[in-house]
Image (cartoon, rainbow, N blue to C red; front, side, top):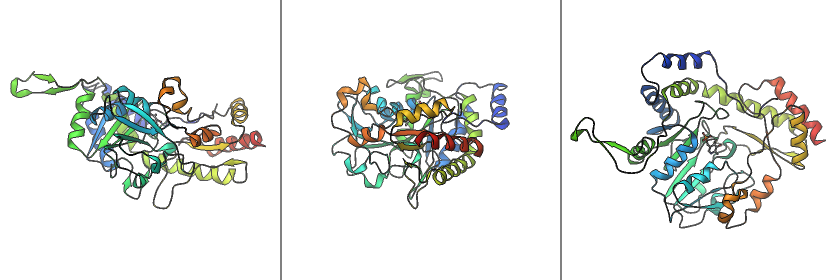
Length: 358
Ligand SMILES: *Cc1c(COP(=O)(O)O)cnc(C)c1O
């Protein structure tokens, strides 16, 4: 089976992890700090705070924003459930905003007034245009799990030029991996301090009362990344440009090969923007048949995502109809897209797709 996504691990990555195993620190230590410094510099943010996964990063961002019971956060429903679950974790309410079918992102013009937070998901790796948000909520949190390396006219996604915090995931199908892992970037010293406390049980050390002394001021978790994972992340980050270039090359090849087929190709990045192509998502009529046929031909196509408001736990939150999200969902199909996908494998995917849609 050719999967839809897969990590690229080489001997440098393996050596970086093996080195950590011979040292003194396995859990959070100097390699986490190094990874955070490298990530912050890569995306142009003042701080990066690493977490054990992208979901924990989203949870921490909502907690650092002090969202809670009575707060309302909005997000798109065409995303992984974690983009909305993070609001429920802190007791906030979730409202969904429909997508713009031209970008497949939340439609910034439909974000209502008077809400506390927007979780802006850069679906498939195309950044949400935060300049066209209709109203400024108290907090803007970007879920950039799909968009490490994407660029906007304001610079790299993650620099928080138009947001308070930006979260990433380093799951193996994402742009770089740490096995499981995530991070939040921010330019705020205060938010960064809150994020670090939340990651480590809410502990604040108070050495003036004794070297051992600390107090827990607010509830936190053990959401730490290990040094093993961080060393892998630093090694992977060195290859990000190559990974992104290959993803974009594969996207160009798909576009050329699929032109003229009865499918809708994914939105392209506008001038001045760049796409990180976490996913290459088609719209195709009769998706169920095409999915089954490609799967039996050994092509690991996927559907991203069952819209969050379709899940039974979100029934009570589906306050407004989401006609665009529902219509797009019926036709979505993600084709294999990862840096180590060879031209030959991609040609196999293309040929199988041609048969399946004819
Ligand atoms: C992958 C992903 C997450 C969660 O990341 P994990 O590291 O798997 O916890 C959150 N939001 C979106 C949109 C994702 O794709």
